[in-house]
Structure formats: structure tokens, C-alpha cells
Image 1 (cartoon, rainbow over the protein chains, first blue to last red):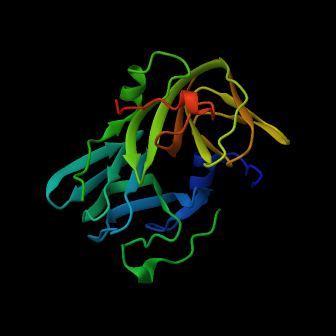
Image 2 (cartoon, chains in turn red, blue):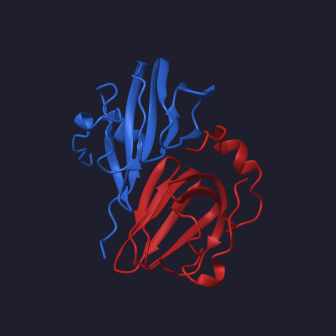
Length: 121
Length: 121
């Protein structure tokens, strides 16, 4: 039975995230991580075969293109789930802060080579 | 392979949540649900033996008392994880909007009697 961790201020933690497309974990629960990512531009098309992926926009606007479905646009406070196996590509015309929820160790691009450890910040 | 669901606007969904302490699910992923709850006053002391519970404050201020640890205070944009097995009690002096992440079917109070189905709104 773990002791509770500290309160996480998303705004404060985002100040520590400077690199683009580099997920920083801020909390763990049930084997999943909540990660903060600063994004700008187009990411690569990719998919996660074994996990759904939650996107929540903290600041800015994010477009998510998905193969076989309409592109969606998320503004601050909007949430979207990309189901497992669905190819998708996040795109941000301007810099945007997003929160991801996915299992610890999930590769960034769906490729194992990008599944670096993501320590808590 | 499920098709993506719609974009969820947290602000719009909270407008549909009027009752207090009544979780409304707005998204599902990996067997978990993201639930919106409008709270005011003191909830009961309880624990969830089998799951961590994520609290994210959307609007207002939430205090979470935990047995054996310091009480924490969350403001809008603050996140806190109550580990499995930890007795806790959420308290809101003023009405507050919170987001919970926990497995689908998790009893509200940790007691099975409160594990009613929580359909998506």
C-alpha cells in the first residue's frame, strides 16, 4: 500500500517541459502514467496495438488525424481517446500543451525503439 | 478495433452534471472510465482496495483528507492520486467540479452497493 504522492500542478509541471514531443510523466496509477507533452508541428503517423491513448488539451489547439475517421480538433479542456490499433497523427499549428494517459512504457511512436523510460518530473 | 468516439468538452459535459457526488462517465479507455463529479460538502471516508484513484480538479477547490498522511488541497488544474487501500475523504467547502479516473464499475464509496453502472453522458 503506497503512500500518496504529492499534489501535481499541471501548470507548474508544464513550465519544466521545454522540449517538443517529449513526454514527461507527472503521475502514475494502476500501471499507467499521466504524461505532459509540449507539441508543435506534425508528429509521425503511428499506432499503439495494445493500448488506447487519452489526449487532453491543457493549452492551445491540437488536431488529431486518424485513418478511416474524420480529423478532430481539440481545444483546451477537450478530451479524446484514440482506440488501440488506430493509426493517428497529432498536429499542432501553434505550440500546444497536452496531457496523455497511457500505460507506463508505451512507445511514443508505437515503435519499441521509442519506449524509453519516462521518469516522473 | 473500436472506432474513435467523439471529442469530449469537459466544460460542456459538466453543464449536464447537476447532482452532487454523482459520477458521470465521459470517456472509456483500457477498461477505465473518466468521470465528472460535481461535489460540495463532505463525502464519506472510504477506500478502494483494488485500484488507485486519480483526482483532477476542473473548477474550484477540493481538500482530500487521507488516513496517515497530510491533508492536501487541490485547486483547478491540480492532480492527485490516492493509492489503492488508502482511506480518504474528499471535502469541498464550495461547489467544485472534479474529474476522476478509475476502472469502470469502481464503487463510489468502495462498497459494492454503490457500484452502479455509470453510462457515458
